[in-house]
Length: 132
View 1: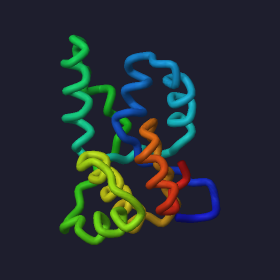
View 2 (view 1 turned 60 degrees about the vertical axis):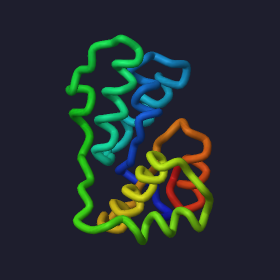
View 3 (view 1 turned 180 degrees about the vertical axis):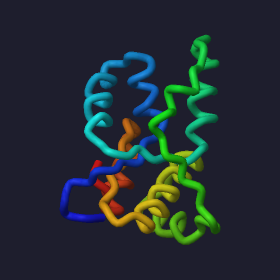
View 4 (view 1 turned 45 degrees about the horizontal axis):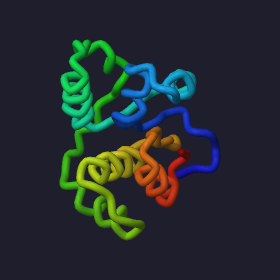
């Protein structure tokens, strides 16, 4: 998206869950996220996080999402979905995150990083020009 280091990042559930559940990559992701001014995501993230916490039998604290700036597109994400699918196939939720990040990147003046632990999603984000 840009050659300078982005100050903002789009984040998906895999990264936030690694931090929340104290997984192996959690400390690295936490340090990385702390370096960004703004964290953005689709509100799909709320459902994914709540579902994961329920699956693990853990109480979900909505405060975990307090740094997230929600991206609410004002139109269909059809063009972003089509652009992403020209790179590769992704499952619907992962594709939605990529499309939302593309939309957000087009409306911001600074570059945007894409933070995920999902290898397929990270490869697609890199292929679309995001810092990963």
